[in-house]
Image (cartoon, rainbow, N blue to C red; front, side, top):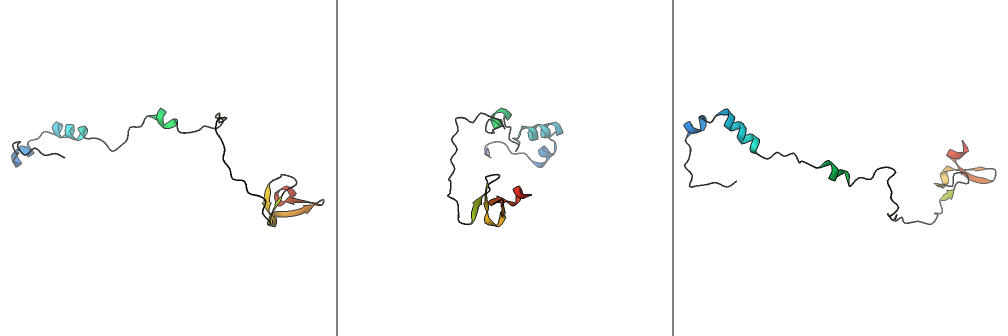
Length: 98
């Protein structure tokens, strides 16, 4: 905050005589810490469900099947071997077996 050293100084009596209205005006003129954000601008960054994403490109790294994984013959999800159950000669996951 800049200080004007050439301005006349107030003594204690002058400071006590400030009116309440003047003090309220001083406090209301200060900038608040709350950021005034435009809701429309904030909403532009969000993608809504069902939005048209046809121009977007999905980049996913595909890994080959690991030695401890299998593909369920019912739901075709890749699962860990600990979830495998043989049904009718094919491997299915525990979720599809029940």
